[in-house]
Length: 260
Image (tube, rainbow, N blue to C red; front, side, top):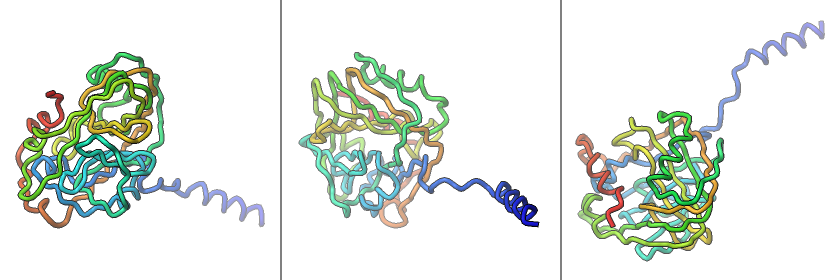
């Protein structure tokens, strides 16, 4: 009888579904949309502390578009118009950000001498599919880094394409650090940034910015396949009244491209 009961218990256990993964495992968690940011929706309700509940690596910006955000090692860094990076307090607000709990699935050695266009081709060639999200971290030395930050805005907020005309551009040479960010599929247009979106943080974590261009030294690329996407939309404020029906592709291209 005991043996029969044991077999029944074992059979029942085998029929149980596998334990569900943690809510944010392999998930890109994003606050608001890129089109809302392009339209001038710069006020947010999500705090840095809340953001870190969903990931330890990522990027974004701050209330009033006050500089560039890099999330690395579970800390939220701000790079302002002086190019200096500093850790932000837990109650800091963001209108747009994306994070994930980073755990590399693939690792590749990156050769020296790749500019940003060449680096994007190198990384894209190693992705299993162009139809998934990926978080990436590239640690190493860089012969050159070209990065930017944007100035804090006051209401009435101008669209982002106007703000970047007054951006600060930083040139770093022979610097060690990391690039962090995401690859997003083409079908996220309007919601996220299709393709690559990367920010730079220097090894001493004293400077950085939104990546515009680079020239790699030797480095190591880590890729985290991230097949789940969770979008948290604002429930109040400018987002609800913003016109998000128009195609902002041209504006996004102008904002992302290296024009300096």
